[in-house]
Image (cartoon, rainbow over all chains, first blue to last red; front, side, top):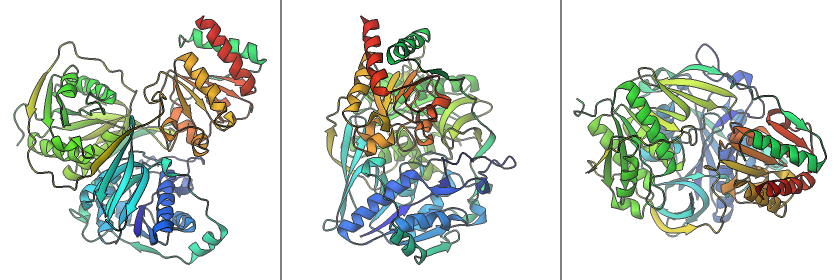
Length: 264
Length: 330
């Protein structure tokens, strides 16, 4: 089976270097290293496990700036077979609408039984793009998966979708789009062999797909439906009170503190 | 061009809970919609699309003056968001409201994504505050809480998803009306069957709505250690949370995870036990009103942003705290 995973390079949250350029309020990508979005790694891991069980391979689809292949190599080192990067200067500053349209158009040029996406990204965190992509491509949409069970004979996929009270067992014909969560299991670290192999794997770079609806002129930052007015660091929290007393005295102080704040 | 009476309206996606009642997040979204509509001099309208929308629609009408209830039998045994999204898109096309507000939880996000794809409406996601200045001006927290941005729509329409627990739900003084209606058009998108609904065996309280969360990390040491976390949570009347490390180790279910790949919470008290406070966890809990931590390591990141930190052994401080809380409760 063939699984395409949507992978987004995001600023490394651990770097602390994220900032927006004050002239256009876009991410200053030069100021911060990029990593594979954490939820996308869970999607990749789930895809790799499934192809190890059922045969086939995992491809990745990314829409990002021209430096994305650096980050995409990490996913290739985990075990993905190949990648497609959609990149174009005009796509800088793309909003949800543009991103959804471009990814949907790019998917139409690929072959797959399943498309996986991460539940949301660590930068914007909207979690709305996968549903939009499934809608535009016309794929069955199975979200918030804690388990994914494709059946190659019946050409159907079963997914445990996390619900407020447990989970729903969803079923749909393939091809379908599945949104992955951390409940699928911890992503592997790339092995040395994987890192070596990734060097010779192909990342195909393409421009805006020709059949992107409605047309390429309505895409990217110039066509954004939203605009940032301001960006600032959140106000710092108050100073920390440090308690180093023995356990009983420390516990007494915690209880007193909670009572003062009317929490208990 | 616009249907009479509803032009420029602010709509609320009325989400239903598994039991058919109105989801809690929708009471917050509806409160926001009513506040904005009042400031803008526009109508606030609730929309409920469900197999049996009556109960949720009646509850939504206690928040906004007018609710449209659309009976959609297919949602009884099919994944709802794609169906609800199509109905919302068709109604938006017909009635031309200006804005659609939805919750930023799984159902609201899924529906918003579908509606945006079908209508071309833009989305401002994960709003933490919204004010009206000729249109919604939306504050959101990005890059894991390192920046707060303020944004607006370029045109005069769009979709806003609202984070849970940032608005206090408040019913209106007078209840509104519920109208049963049909959405135009066909359901063209493929449907996803629900073949079973499974209730989780866990009795853990949901963390998203908890006023107090007691959370454990790597320092808790194992599933056994989580018993102490649970006991302290019980004594405080709170819910149990966890870090990614504790979940990946299998000590506690994923549903309880707080952080970058888990849930984002905003309780009155966040008690962090054996949690270092790495950025991936911090993003999920840093807006808690009060943060108290117990950690052995005085250099742990959490010691920099907690309101109070006890430097000590969790398995000494924890039982002492439990005893003190129980003594206080009598």
